[in-house]
Length: 511
Image (cartoon, rainbow, N blue to C red; front, side):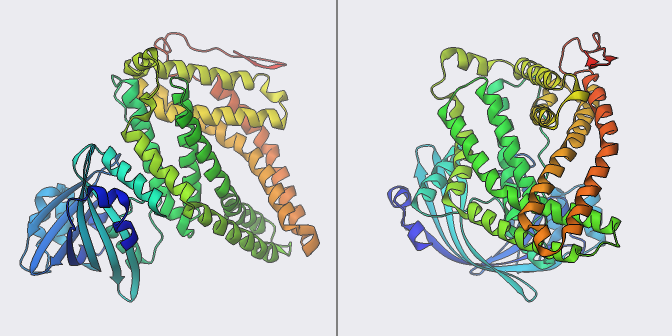
């Protein structure tokens, strides 16, 4: 921590030596955590002889923006009445019925400094100490960056320079979130991809910023849960976040061509590759093996195979954690934030490219969705007779269309047509994914060398189970394809007046 405090970027731009404080705080909530459930944190902090009560809220779509309200109180005892004007009527009623209680405490030594950069002024807090909940504790060692004035890019600029100086782990997970999870002895909350609500009048430039910001938020939210490892959904969501990011960068490459876009896409692909093994073993252990074991109780050997799978899973999680701790990963995530806030895609763009960025995003959305939709239909021509490899190519194109639709369909409205199309696309993707799961299972069984450990019967049971399952899958897959191919596209101006008609022939479906 002292080494970072003496980093060149701070030494050259800090206003002075800063101030040192010893901060003690108690965080409160109702027994059923009503405040946290509604996105609030509520604490009383002691600094010297002063007591300050603070209410904080988090923004739903901006990882760096939080609301904060403070009030002086006479002691560490909270005054919930001061917070009542900030909450909804429903939450106010719950707070009146269920008094708040102490959940956990923090004891932090802070060195606070102001750094003036050309793009803005940032307050740094070098914090070390611990959080305590009952008989459990958690160390705190972090550098908190808060924008005091200027552009948000100042935060990312400073973070990048600190990342160059030494190993840092970017995080938006607050002390409050860590403390509540410590008190509950629970993993971090499971993130979900943020829902975009883009205004149809938004410019393409602003749409790119909002799309990338949602990808960054999803990525930052997923990192701690994936690293924790107790909930398999964490690794899944982190891989989804990386796929969404790569799809967003693909969108942008159709307008601007920058080496920076290609580099970020390559870094996202590198990180996703380091996480693939952990996710594959999660699915095998939690879903595949459990399902077949429950369905074949007379077959012995599932426990042995499960123990081997646990070993492989643990090894893959160790490898994934090494990748997440790698400075390459840390610099990639911080660099992405800096790229977004500085609108890095504008650099080295020809005048015609800048003109396109200023146009309404809805025109771009219709064109890109139409093109990707046509690609899926082309790859799926004569779908019934396609090979497994050809269907895999359809799955990849459909997956990209789904991410494009998640980003861009809000520009085309939120009507029933958009919901129906999204549902049919999701159904197709799910059915196509079953074949991919079978190929992954085969690879994992080969990895544990099931035959050599006397579990060949278990391996045969799993292979046979999945092969039998595909008998019913084929009919569902053909149905999902026909319904997707026949769905009205919600982005065309005249979609309602020109429905798509399909005719079934011996060669497949004709559009």
